[in-house]
Length: 366
Image (cartoon, rainbow, N blue to C red):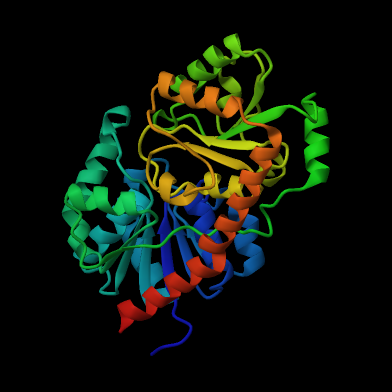
């Protein structure tokens, strides 16, 4: 069996998303891998450079325009000489499959699918076409890896028929995401939160699947009946453009997200569909936060008995759960948070994730 297997990863970009962070964590432990990007390396450019990772940027303006770069991709393959192609998310999966179908390469192809039940009516026609095309070309993949059981079940249901399909849960860095009393005091002082305030944290970009409309309606109704009982902080792209109810704050995107977990007591994920494996939920758990989430994707498997599940994604369903957790004493919240960290450390480590991927690389070459 060949040692130091070279994998060429294909991905649209390296922004702040969960899939992007997982890829970078994988690269930290496999420095001989390379990356092809449809756009650019974005926030991880410095990380790639410091690790000595080879990468190529197509700099295309629209994701479907990447098909103009097929022959550039062929030259990259000739230069880098990978053993395996690994594509991340729908657009890259489709591109890599079309290239293989057109005999641009004959290497093993691994797809990484990161979502579960996509309700496509909220998204563009081009995304719908990409998903349909991925279904057709799925038999081209030698292995399809999902980051959630829910994601694998959904895609099998809609016709993804790769030769082999399995789940690898995300790994999150427990040394980076951990409770820090310094940032708790500093950031609570910045937002004028009292030490006794219960703070709810929601980390999610503005996107239909993230369910901000129902969540904020539920929080507003809760606040009207329970003045100042729970403060809410929103973090994520475009959250700073929202119209916010009382005692709710939003800061948009931030590059030091790990610091903000320490100011909170509860991490909430109110998504209505589409989630596979939520990194945010695990990051919060590692930071000693009580996890609360809608029963979407693998949230139930992640939380287990360390937090609360919201049965309905409606504002009434979320509001009912807010009423329930609003009655919790701080001591109990902290107790749940400690249990949550222990579970996240044991179940969702970087080491376990990297080991699983490296094992699959050996299998597909065997």
